[in-house]
Image (cartoon, rainbow, N blue to C red; front, side):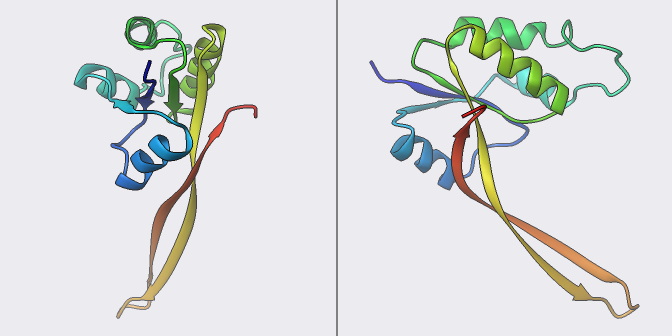
Length: 130
């Protein structure tokens, strides 16, 4: 049975990330969450004293869409990521994150200020805790 990479990420995967998931993780499908789940995941309110209840819709979505053998790419708000990695592991699934190489370029502006540009290039997926 083909396995999927289920995405909890603040942006779309790059073509390099999709290719890496297929080649090196052996996954055949990338599953993006519906817009409502993506919106919720990408906008964790910083003023909430605890977020477990806020994440309940994300957990329900994962429970109905993740199957044994699937891997879940989890990156975003630090606390939400921590909660969801535990949640995924408790269900016997594998939580992964994307590593990247950061390239920086500085450009002196006419007014003497410096414009700093960062480019992130995907390198690999890595298991949380592994």
